[in-house]
Image (cartoon, rainbow, N blue to C red):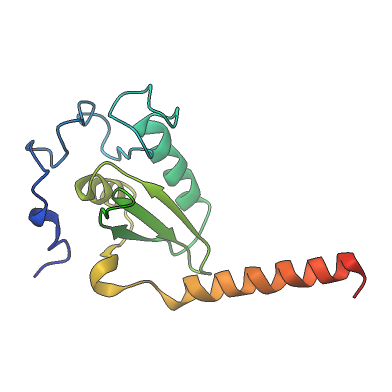
Length: 146
């Protein structure tokens, strides 16, 4: 089993580009990522084109050190998504059109890419979330005068 072993298991992949039948705009840039609810056109329900999401992720990654890409498979509740994690644990998550789009994005930006189902998430991501919660609670207590 390879890094993207679950990639070939989905019966919904109909085109040679790895996208579903609704991904008409998949011939775009190498880092094409698709926002939630998008059907491949720029007039998606999220109002953002694939290129815009890819640009946002590229900008996010360029402003941080040690960024890694974790691909999350499609579930019954959410579509395929990508999680970018920086060296300090800061992270961002976006829906994308397919695991192939995540691979293209990672390779275009020279970022390491992992399958979240196989390797899991880095501890630094959970630690970052805990630190942020502690800081938020501390600020709330100070605002109340405790």
